[in-house]
Length: 326
Image (cartoon, rainbow, N blue to C red):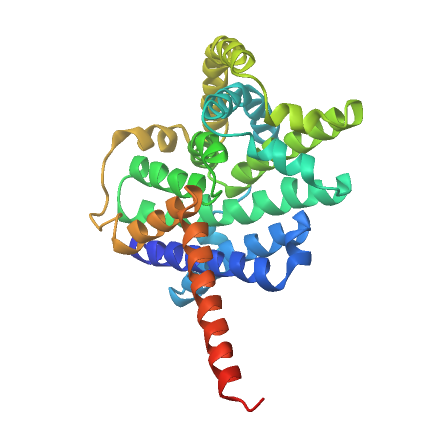
C-alpha cells in the first residue's frame, strides 16, 4: 500500500463518514444520542476502508502497521514524554479557542454517560482505531512514497482534519507529529497508541473530577472569557517553553534505548527514497470535504438539498390530490 492507495482510502473514508453522519441523523437518532455508539460507528468507518486496501495490496497488517515489541522501560518513558508534551498541546487548544469553542469540554459535558463507558470509548477505542489509520496505515504508506518528514506532516494533517472541527484539529496536528516521532523512536505503533490513549484518557478523568466538583464545569470550560483565555495562553507559553526541551530529551532517550536514534534523525533529513506522488486528486478532494464539514458548508448544503426534495415531494402530493375525485 503506497501513498496513492492511501489517498483513495482517505477519500472513501470521508465519503463514508459523511454518509454515516447523514444516516444517523435521519434514521438512527438513538445512535446520535449515545457518545459510545456514535463514536464506535465513526471509528469503524475510519479503519474499514484501510483494511480493504491493505488486503487488496497483500500487506501483512501487523507488520505493515508497525505492531512490534517495545521495551518496558520505553513504555514508562513514553508516559513521561506524554506528560511533558501536554502543555504544548494545551497551548494550541487554548489558542484555537480565540475563534472557536472547546469541543471536547462541550461534548463530554453534554453526555450523560457512565465514566467507564466514556473512558472505553474516548480513552481506548478512539486511540487504537485512529492510530491504526493515521500512524499505522497513512504514515507508512506515505513513507513508502516519499520522505519521512513529508509523510509525518501529511499524516498529521489527516489526523487533524478527521476530527471535523477546528478546535481539536489545532492540537491534533501537533499531537500527530509527536506520535510519529514516538513511533519512529520505538519502531512500534504501540507507543503512539499509548501516547494517544494517555492524552484522551486524562481528558476524560479530568473532566469527570471537574464535573464531580461542579456540575456546570463543562459549560464554564467551553465558554471562558477572552481575558481569562489570554492569561492562560501566556501561562502555558511559559510552561511549554520549559517542558518542550524535556519532552525532546525523553524522546531522544527512547530512541537510544530502542537502538533507533538514527531512524529518529532520518526524519529531518528530507531525503526521498522514492519519488511517487504523495499529494493526488483523491487526497485534495478528501481535504476539501473535511473543510466543508468544519466550516458548516456541508450541513448547509444537506439542509438545502433535503428542503428542495421535501418541496418537490409536497408539490407532487398536491398535484396527485388535485387529480383525485372529491
